[in-house]
Amino acid sequence: MKMRITLVLISLVLSILIGVSLSNRNGESNGKQAGKQRPLIGLSMDTNKEVRWITDRDIFIGRCKELGANVLVQSANSDDARQIQDVQALISRKVDALVIIPHNGAAMAKAVKMAHEAGIPVLAYDRLITDCNLDLYITFDNVRVGELQAKYLVEHLPQPGKGKIVRIYGAKTDNNAFLLKEGQDKILRPYLERGDITVIHEDWADNWNPEIAKKITNAAITRHGTNFDGILVSNDGTAGGAIQALKEEGVAGRVLVTGQDADLVACQRIAAGNQSMTIYKPIRNLATRAAELAVKLAAGKPIIARNAVNNKQIDVPTILLEVVTVTRDNLVKTVIADGFHSYDDVYRNIPEKERSPRP
Ligand code: BGC
Image (cartoon, rainbow, N blue to C red; front, side):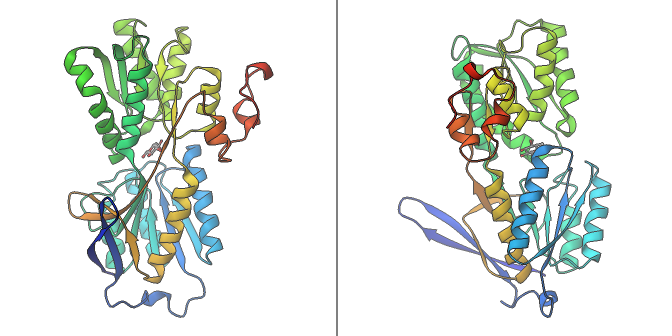
């Protein structure tokens, strides 16, 4: 199904937003769906080895079911060739819409092309698919995540705005890793230019692998000792690897470490003081909205997106969701109040008298 994308300018009280309306070429519903009882959605995942993505998957499936749709799920184990095969399999099962969480945003352009040839619209979930005619994209504001991580680090250095840091970026195959870096760079730039903050070591963690993050931290320590103030880490999984290396040197808790995802183990580390912050991205919003969009796409119904993100080929209609900084001080008011994690789980390893009051 080729989608007609109409850019409509909608002016709101203070700002002008780009409204993107997607509709089927002839304004008809998806032909394949006619006569079918329930729409069929295909979900192609990079991995189901990280807690984060299991949460996404389960909420997504639950909401699709509530909306009367069935979901077929494939997970590629971080392998591009396998993810292409997964998409092929979903296409041959005649899904009405495809939702892809790409391992490699560039490699999945081929999957989008194949889906379009079969008349199936594609929604990129959380991670952008570049160099293709992608129909729709839903994500958190990743540049903002990077800004919040760097801002926290800068403000909480022993001497605020001054110090030595290590930087651990995400997977080079993931466009988000670059957006996070972009946000971080924006905040750090003036401090780096003045020489107030120095990056003593930096590297990319392939596949967002915690083991690689640990090795990067070990390498920083081997070269420079433990005389640095913080590690600007892009997500909680890799923060876990970095913290493990710091623990082995006896400096966990002293060296600031950032993260993202509000994984339970990261929230427990924050409660214990080993990780300084994380970014809570309300996955329920993302997965729920994505399910609603996928079901609409499957039915060829119009969709309004207020943002657009360039994927090197087109401006992809995009839905951007807000994020929240989580620290030891607001664990209760954020992830716990939202029911993302329970109070008992977050404070499981903390003696009663050292816990924040139960809500
Ligand atoms: C996501 C993060 C996640 C990372 C590793 C990124 O694309 O935005 O939430 O931690 O991938 O899976």
